[in-house]
Image (cartoon, rainbow, N blue to C red):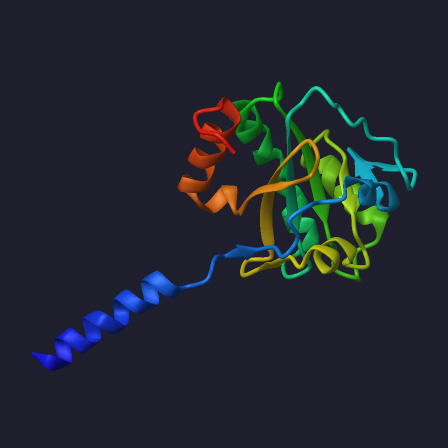
Length: 181
């Protein structure tokens, strides 16, 4: 009996004490950093410092980050799946950013061609030096993560929307104003 109680206690501790899949140390994201990254869009290599619009009317920013832990071209081929999630979350209140820290062996040209095959028309920023993850203390178990901020860059949520239904529900409530900051 004692063995069972001890085992149950140990399992409960593991379930309650596990760290999040995605963590970030920064409380504020500096969006001007995106101006220093290369960017690609549907087979097109955009100029460094590509002028992305800072739509001040939108109260939220959502950054999707993919790190070098996974195959960069494999990830880009799946970006079209974001179109459905974006249609559910909407674009009237959220500005979306897609940031990829590619593996070193993938050239910008190869990444642009891969993105073109996936029919994803939004720009994807390439952080070849890992500056974003380093400056913001971003760590993920899967290599991917999502960060929701307000328009000033204050971090409101960190998680993985694709793998966590609770995260999606939280963001839906947050952007609909169901609860205060």
